[in-house]
Length: 120
Length: 107
Image 1 (cartoon, rainbow over the protein chains, first blue to last red):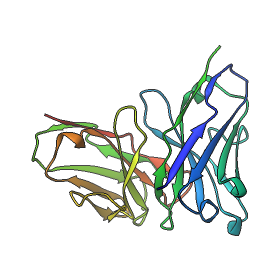
Image 2: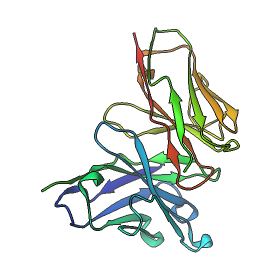
Image 3: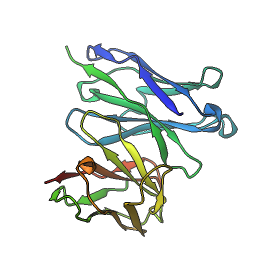
Image 4: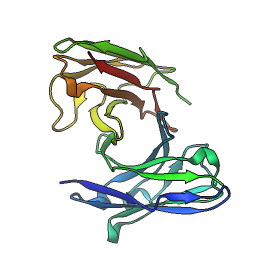
């Protein structure tokens, strides 16, 4: 059974940093692109970014709203995905989900999400 | 960026009904279109990819169609558990973008 478990969310002040983790199991993590998607309270879904797999150089893509502030990385030996968030703004307040990207390049599975609150 | 526009924003239907949700892309995206279901307080669930292919385990009451700019999600034989918000998403080009969501209420 595929499982994605996010952690690391919490309350942080504007300008602060936070690192989210996504622990994966039940599939061959290293074979998959992985994404982060967020959802502000009461709002819709917003794509944050992507990391490709080793065969594609672990390259990354980001939404313009987070580019230069957020960094996505992965550790295939630990089947883990990370989101380093720096220079956080109040508008980054959201539930952050990790998601697998299937061979068809669409999202397959989602984690349960972790809440990040940016507030003074 | 490609804008995804869903209609309607919300709808109400009865048990046993069939409903259709529309998603329009601001430019052609071939069939790189996915649909998701999200219930309150829960993570999204993937329903359809490539505009019309069902994700594993998704019941056949869900069906998708369309290409380029116009897409539909049809849900037949509505049940109370189908009450949720439904999102479309394009993955033709970066940034990946979602529609604003359609809230489905079962009367």
